[in-house]
Length: 373
Image 1: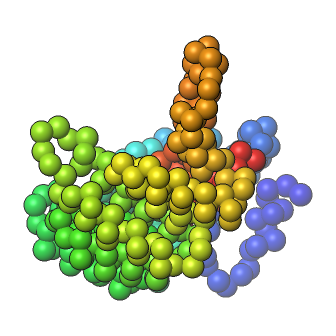
Image 2: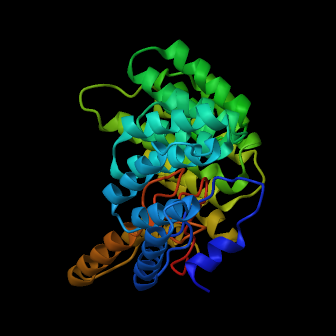
């Protein structure tokens, strides 16, 4: 079927939708896309009034990175006399996408505003504006737009990003207000709970840390709880790395707030593992080994927990200097393996992510229990 036949099939429908253009969903092979561009270019030369075909052609140009040609097509439509307002709105909308793809964020914002003024709060327009606000660091606006879309997860995420900005600017009360709003919007927001825990730790409040941790463990998805525990451990490690200053909270208070709270939960591999990590970080090697062994009872193939147990017990073994040197080398390499993976696309990272950098899935992060993941 030719592209012209494809477009004709959809003609006559009274419903007008903003949808991704060709090449913006599943990517066509390059040769097929070029063939489509050539065919549609011929059609519009023979039929200048074919607005839908113009729009499709512009989207194909954008998919190939030919942003200037895509922009030219949209502008030609926008200034056309007598163009139906629905098509003018679509042209503005696609022009905004073109500008955003080309990195012209101010122009993209103007184009989306024009589309919205013509067609109202269409979800596709609001989503593009939300993405644009997030890219431009306008986190409060991004949160508001995601709220209008009824998407609480990204709404909470950008409320947390705004709270972090306020914290860095020294406005802790306002930051706390945004965090509370994030949790209200989406109780399972692990990024919000991570920031709550970090804030309690920075304030040196062991009692607040314990309360926040209990709430986080109760409200977050059990498969995602490792995310805020990772954040807490990184906050504690970062505080100790800063030279010349005492940590905000003594090790004893930190352990008393966290370890018994984790122990109250139903047996869980990652809760045991992160409890062990915190104990190791605070110098409690014997207790950490006990927690690691409980981890391995639940999941014997958990490679990182097994590695930590071996590291704790290797000094009890007799090795030749050469063998010990090789062992240290391989253990160091193994510990550098990427611990996290995206459940949607398989991307591996060694740092926590809330939005997958590759497939743009929200909260798709998982812990790699074994090498095959």
